[in-house]
Length: 227
Image (tube, rainbow, N blue to C red):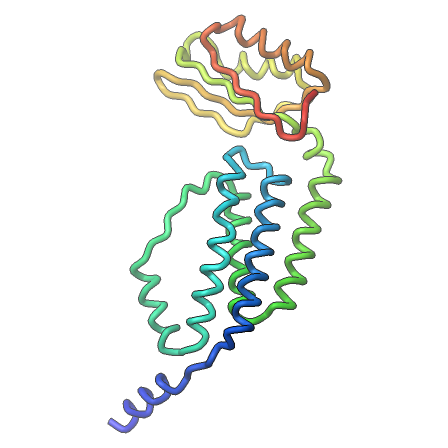
């Protein structure tokens, strides 16, 4: 009985008072860093999904993570309760590409850092990581070439094949990198990363694809500018 009472006293006394002023400063800093991160993701990300919509979640995720860590670290009993809560709650998100998961984890890491009170380390790491991301994108030859996304969709799969699409794109584009391919009984859809040196090559590829199947749907998504 004495040991159990001692453990209860340990749980109730292990509580840390969090200064409100310091917490507010850290919360504002985490919001600023998450906003910068969302801007970096929208501008320098290569994901085919809607990066702007996905980046809007970064600030909320970062600030909520910081709130949870700040509350949990103030009490051992709360930290033990969090283990049970996480065993009940399940977080499911439609993560389509590894890049999305990387930035999502980055946002959570910012919240963890500020929630744990490691402001200097978090800010320093943020500056270094973001700097490396920008340098990698700007000085990477591969990224410079991939300046246009193309999605080809046909509801008559027998009329056009993947081989025909690739051959046409190879004739008109300097770089052809297939990112995704879906095929069903009533649908064929292929996504590519391409490089066109001028608008004439782009228009030539579009005309050749439409010549095979006039009902084909062609979607061009500009990444860095093709004109």
